[in-house]
Structure formats: C-alpha cells, structure tokens
Image (cartoon, rainbow, N blue to C red):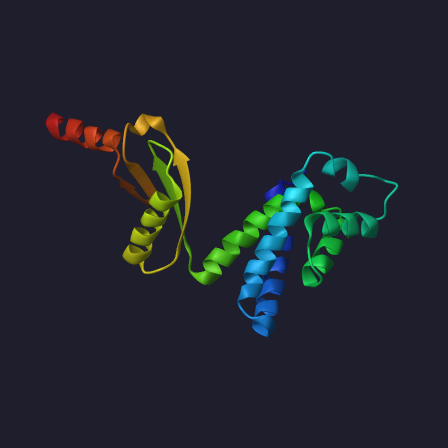
Length: 183
C-alpha cells in the first residue's frame, strides 16, 4: 500500500493550484482561507469516530462529504468541491497529509523560512515573537517557527533552518569548550 504522503501529494498540489488561482481572482488572502479550510478538514477527519463516518457503506460519498463540510465549518466555495472530490475518491483519510503538504507549498510560494527552535525550557509567546523578529531581520524573509523543548540543552536554544544550525545552548557551549581543550 502506498504511503499516505504519496497518496496526498497530487491532491495537495491540486489544492494549492486551486488556491493560487482563487487568490488571483479574490486576493492573496485566499491562500490563508484554503490553509485554514484544509486544517479544519484534517482536524475533523482525525477526530474520534470520524473513521466510522468516512467508511460507512450506508452513506454515499456526497453524504460523507456534506457531513464533513458541515462539521469542519467549511464555507461555500471551491474548498467544498475539493472535499467532495476527496470523498468520491475515498481520500479523506489523508486530509492531514494534504494540509501539511499544502502548507509547505504555501510557505515556499510566499518565501517563508521554516525554523525549528529547540529550547531548554518552554517559551512563552513573547519569547517566540522575539526569536521570529530576530530571524526575520537576519534573513530578510518571513519566518515560521516551531518550538520543541529539550531539557538536555541545560539552558539556551538551538535554532535549525534547513541545514544551518545555530547552537546557543549551554550544552553546545560546553561541547565547544571541551573540543577546544582537547586540541
């Protein structure tokens, strides 16, 4: 059986193209509308009991699509048609992967940099905003940050953007010091 990401990829690409076309006619905010709609769809499909609804042989694909659309709160428009296509092709189960791939395409289209920040302690919203501001200024492009907590860092943060790692953690500094002392 094919991997969910493999199954989701053509649907995510189609959704992104539909969103871009929609944005050309109704403004760039349509990309955000599509992203939010796909995230809502993914949440509904991943909810407990959703699998039973999606796999119910007593319901037609149209009925399943309509139920999912109503539960997700997806407004009138092309996203509803997209959900109907997913239901007709029995692909609602990969909605989370479609939403993930859509967001990656959107980030690339908008020039957004994806940064993974690992902190020794949980970061509050103000601290995350400060990191985003510094990274945005440094790279000259918008930055989307995801934060993980790793107590093994002892203190500070480690920031990964693509292959570039900036290690500002205590563990990293101790490792550098140990390496310098050995040479």
